Length: 435
Ligand SMILES: [Fe+2]
Image (cartoon, rainbow, N blue to C red; front, side):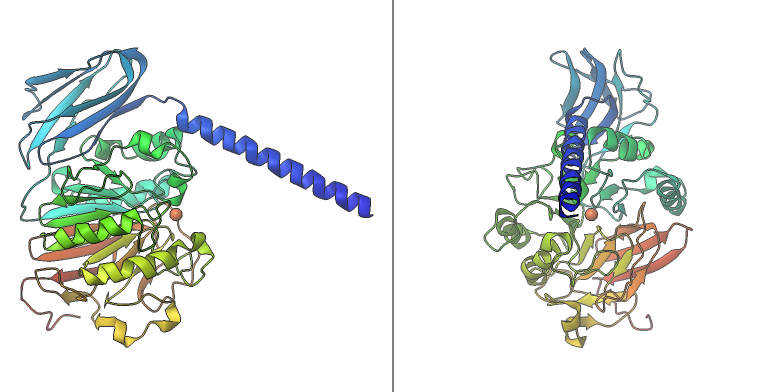
């Protein structure tokens, strides 16, 4: 009997080791394997953009661009033959839309309606589409996308930015999986917007993420130079958007990312500050932020090490994914513990959908926390975190609308209904008479 048990255990050990090694091999291969890819834009700044594409054959490709779709009067040719094309266009006008097309002998490219826009110094309003854990191709992903499109009257001109909160391509963020789960299903968006993608745990497990994307390290898109593609900020009109890597970066007080975050926020001059990171500080939407073992303890680290900084600099909104549901707080402050320690002292404004703040980011002025990891997946969950009273087991996405003095947010669910919405006002008007 003992011998049988020993043999069985040995068999299980060998089989699971072989499976693990095999899987690692497949994922490593898929992360480095070459895949053809239609053009997409990265590194958006006020005066430049980079267009990348991958052609099946080694060749000299070229890119034409201009102010009008039927008159692309400037052309840039690759300096040498390659399959991995990356062309940076500089000397562009700020806040300006350009059309472009890419020429390739071996890649069949749909050049219709290809455009990009440079970042703006100012804007009367900007709409940002936010999706989280969106990397599972299928009907649900498509429906969530289509319901957002209905909100903007199927007019891409009504959208300004696209933000992905991580886990952008299940299961392991490989090259093939990025094509299947992001570049193909969202191809019309990819033709017009920079996919500003943060890194989720499923992206961080493997090696393809920073081969696919280029991110600013020298403050090219605004904010304090970070010296790292893992964390950086973007100044887009009235918004200072901070992108953090909660997956592999250290988050202790003396870590590079935390030191940079403080410096970046202390120098910010924009009225609106939004932070995006995959791992939420609070959630009961699939992951459990009260469980220190969940997600390698990263939720605890975000709470204890990042929230004091968000409070210090009056961050307006923190966007996360990871839990596959929707959860949202009121305007809260100074909550770094588990859910049992959350109390009325943490709630600065006890309203349902209207909050006020001063125009200049101010210490302890309150933050709204939003978890949206259900843009393609849904988990069964309790959704009972006391800091997150507006919580739904629904798939959907967020549409933000930011003006110089207001920030409004809508959660559009998969059926096209607005399940949750709120506004933060910095225009000296009160929320009186509103919930
Ligand atoms: Fe995740």
